[in-house]
Length: 102
Image (cartoon, rainbow, N blue to C red):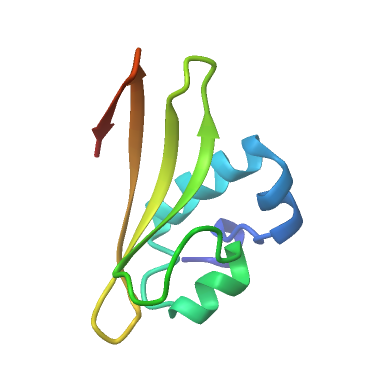
């Protein structure tokens, strides 16, 4: 990756601006920029939210839609607590039913 392809991460924008979260999530997926980061590094970037250290998957909400659906960035960790994979998943609401799409 060249310097011109890098996007600087800004924690305050991630916390407060949905369009920035969407842009950064796409960037992280395309560049696999989070692969190899530790849980502590991820927590420093995004915060802890509702993630627990003993779990091998952490998720961060990217955005919600008006119908109650949500889009998340999902991080998979290996046994040594390093990110091994990342992906987007969506949760759709159909009345009282919530459906997961990965």
